[in-house]
Image 1 (tube, rainbow, N blue to C red):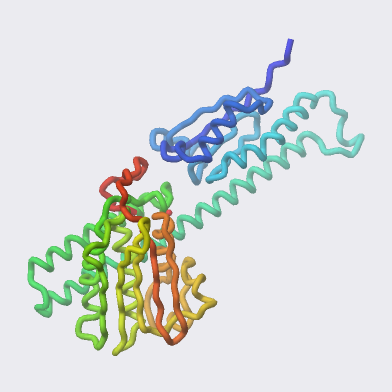
Image 2 (cartoon, rainbow, N blue to C red):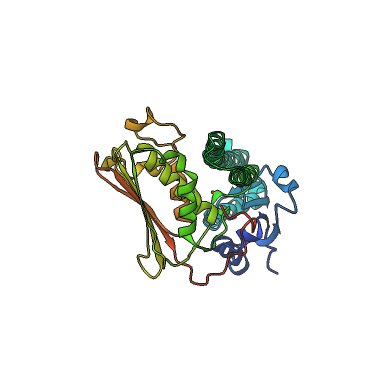
Length: 378
């Protein structure tokens, strides 16, 4: 009679969105189909329905895979759970063999080998190291998210402040002032919701692509920043074709990119300079957004680095305000839309930032987004 296989009890803590990912589909399929030497007992739990599991197993990120049996308990997290599981399965098998023969092994002191207790402590140390690395990664993600939300808060607050100044000077009437103030307060409310979800949601999941008239969003962004260019000796050029196709993008995020790029261009362009905004239907699949200025330009060696978190050029950091995360936010927005962002520049000759956005071709909105009203969106 064949000996009973040892039990491998696993708990997978994941949302429906996580379960739809290729990594978790592969993990579940591997556990069901492969002969891993264990009788696998896999339990799947949604953290939204069972939040107590996060505290019970000290989970700092989801999706997470918890090995409950055999002891010691181990926790895996991230987007490579299948790879992590395949790495550890052979070791678990080896540990089971040692465990089953443990009573017949001679004491380690007699042959110089490690005791079973030492092996267990070594494995527990590996588990603790892995949990520590996961925690450090998660804290880094949260720090980046907090910086980005803080940076985003500046835009509606600045717009509200400019609207208040314009109203006080009689440059805008009462209805327009109330409309601007209401829209900016709505923006702040959305950002506060994002901030509450920083600990549990990836930034990239906080977006809601839909059919969007990008030209209208661009026009609104220019009007919002009018205080930065009206009355200045500066030429503002726009090229937005009337037959520009709609794009498949998040309205709120596209507006954020436009405001970031335009604000930077207006900020760095001196009196007598020029700023341009161009939208072009480059191919059947992409619309290209370009914001150019006649400012100080960007050295070639810095043109990749400026899209990293908290990187600001030394030649501008002393004369302009900001947290240095605006362009990294733009890069993430481009990435999550499947497009790309880059800069073309020479020192002393200004800079042109280009971003591609997918054309709307009847795409269906994703079912996994967090809030349909987010306008979207680690």
